[in-house]
Image (tube, rainbow, N blue to C red; front, side, top):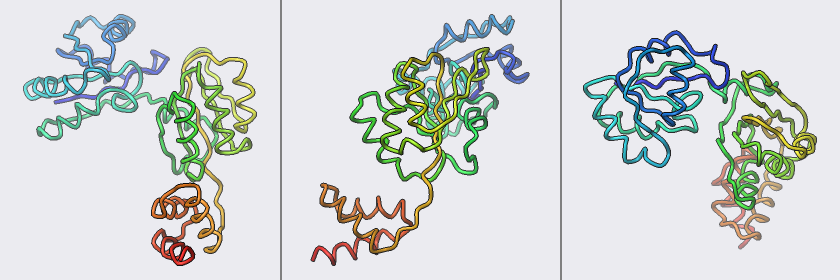
Length: 272
């Protein structure tokens, strides 16, 4: 079978008993970075020396079938550098291929930066969405963030320390400077820090530079009561800006709750 195993995101003490046992007994380990896995084995005092296969973004498409073929006759342990494989890390392609081939996939649960940040951020946790890393190019990043401005659920993002200041500034512009958020830095490590505040305030704080592994948690858009006629006006404004009518109706429907079909028909009637 394929065994997805969560590894510590910072504190080695978070390595579970099941992870240690799996590493002691594994014959084949598919790892995001084999050097990181070797250091983990040494740090945990694991005497076993399994066969290590590199599994990363650049080779997963080609290597997935090979790993699944191995798993049809033996257990293959799949590791990312930190946290749960497949969550913004390699592994999805292997799982999808295994599912198609009828090979069993199971998991050894454990640390997750997404859930850890969500838990400590102090923002609503009943509904949330994980957005991964935002785009590196400023134009693409701003466009993507504008598309999330009306998202009502709490949002979780990964970001590099070198780009977090620019990303927070773009978030403040797209979501509003007062939108509540939290920057979670070095989770579970010695210098763990959770900085909470409005996006504008956090952008100013980050401008001086931020170090470490970063997770940004942003509160969802506040509920807005918009009557139908105002919603139709919003659709028409988007259309005038170049958005297709069908897409505009869907976008406005998403943050007003009005029927996309009814908005489309009403807007079409107004346009004549």
